[in-house]
Image (tube, rainbow, N blue to C red):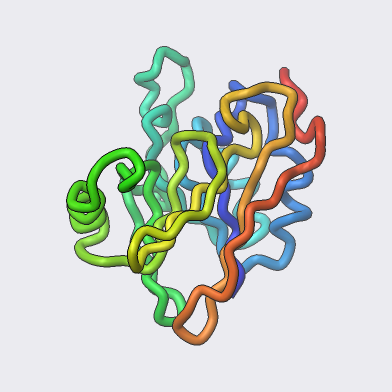
Length: 185
């Protein structure tokens, strides 16, 4: 199964619509996971034209970060999702503290609190910095931001593809979108 990973789209703050290249990269995926800071529900509606969508509630989705955007209640959005796909437990959340920022114990506690126990993969966003890192048995994938990579404007955004099959992760890849993919408003 191929899963499209995206985060921190900040639509329409960053730009009016998702970059068209997102739809090209995600063509043929079986599921789209958005790791939060969506801002407006139409982003989820647009992504659902590709495949089913689930999303994590981001810190900016509640309209509390000094901006006027607020994600409306939506069954696709939760604080955290836990899905099992082909025997692989995947957790989706906006952010968890990772051992490079804190201790392994804090990381394990965050996993237990968000997902009820160990997971094979965590998909998270928040930092706008793309990366794929393994901490013990858990692979952490941050797709970065398709619209504000590393919190910069005018540079290519990033998304990711996660592939699982036969009870294992068979691939995780960060994909850089073309230059000018998100034209600022």
